[in-house]
Image 1 (cartoon, rainbow, N blue to C red):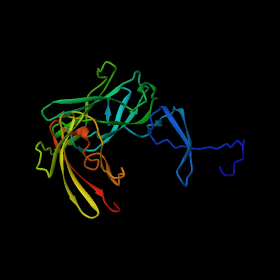
Image 2 (spheres, rainbow, N blue to C red):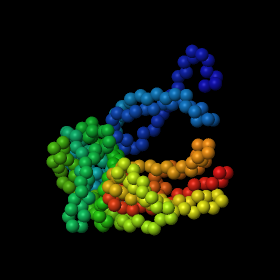
Image 3 (cartoon, rainbow, N blue to C red):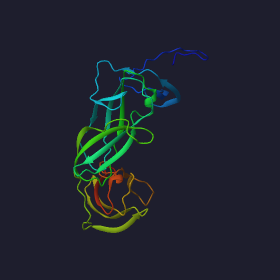
Image 4 (tube, one colour):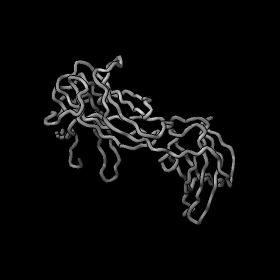
Length: 283
């Protein structure tokens, strides 16, 4: 662009390869210009575009026939996860004919005692099945949200395709066997070097902290508890504040346990300890 002259029109062409199975539908095309040396963006433009063709099913065959028009070749999902996780699921859908109506997937976790937990998902987000052509391969992705209180154990993952009235269009089939792992929980507050009570929004309480200090690091162990199940993710920050000049020479901002234990999966009354380290080099 350093060689472009004022008023010059510069035609350019780009080819974006669509992965096999890309669902047909409306997409947003984002175009930005940036300085490769500094990564500073000059500006950005968003355009709406339509992906009309679908990948041919080719030699792919259905493992499960769900309606006369739609089958499932395979799914990919982690076989084990923790309560409160939302494992990603990839489904490889195949069509034999144009589906006559829009359908959704009803995914159901069935426990050993027969209890069922169901949720509805589009087969491919933003791509209604009524727009799918015949003899197509379409890859859908979904996340199966689970409650933090989900009991550990083995579950069968069942699938049925349903209409707007949630009535099934075909059979319900078992597509995977999953294991929900146990997550340890504590409900007792340990002794603390520095106890105090700080409550945040009647949802989370900070009971206090333990501390250890070296010349280079201040190590804090914070003890929280959930006054009610938070149900959403909150971040925290700990700032080392200089009262003389108002500066913050060290800080830690984040999600508890280095992002591995977000508050959305805390249970009512649960006590959570979290150790953080504030760097003191140069302080």
